[in-house]
Length: 247
Ligand SMILES: NC(=O)c1ccc[n+]([C@@H]2O[C@H](COP(=O)([O-])OP(=O)(O)OC[C@H]3O[C@@H](n4cnc5c(N)ncnc54)[C@H](O)[C@@H]3O)[C@@H](O)[C@H]2O)c1
Image (cartoon, rainbow, N blue to C red; front, side, top):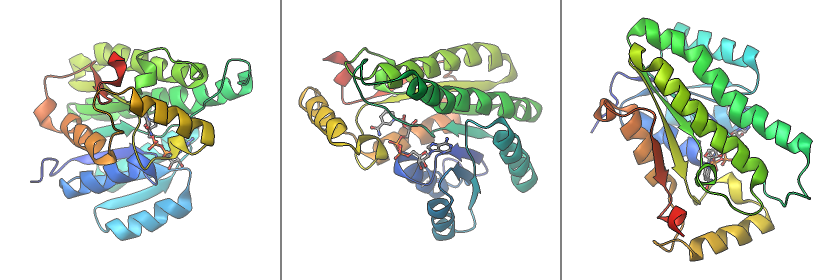
């Protein structure tokens, strides 16, 4: 079923992990997708595999100049933007003593400023076209407090705050803004250190559904929020964590 037929989607961090899966699903649902990433090698290879409905552009989401270039390219290529998915993000895991303020500033720059800039640059285009849907990737770490996540959590709580403020401000322009809060998701780059893997194991054991999530499950939520099926939803937190926030 082509639930996104005729939609033009801008997706950040689309070369790997969940973003790569979202790009595949969005295309399967009929969307035309420009996906961006820092990693040009992986991005170009994926674009070639995905074919005519996909365009890749290199982008650092923390750069305002890059956002302006990508939004201009999106409008030149497709004529507008129906959906923005702020997916690019970086992770950090460490005790308060092990972390440092440079790491905190870097995470805030990519995860928070990257999301905020995307909304700021895309909203005028959507408003001129009569509306749109913006989806921001927060995290379960932006919903509860956990040990060793003070840096990452700070950024993901901020993403939820931006989502709610933007939803209030942009609602009258028919622009919906929602946040997705995944728990631990398999086949992603977020759990590539030994410490993080151990933490994921603990998370799995304490999750009511007793497993990690699949990328496809998060992509299904992305498709729903991108589509007109979610037309009366804005400012929401969509937890997709196997119930882990309950433990
Ligand atoms: N993996 C999880 O279990 C999990 C859980 C909760 C939330 N999230 C969030 O979901 C999103 C995707 O996570 P993932 O695990 O698939 O990540 P990933 O590390 O597998 O992929 C992230 C992608 O973003 C790109 N990227 C990193 N910095 C960038 C920048 N400055 N500009 C542009 N692109 C950049 C990377 O090159 C990579 O392709 C992130 O926002 C993450 O915080 C992930």
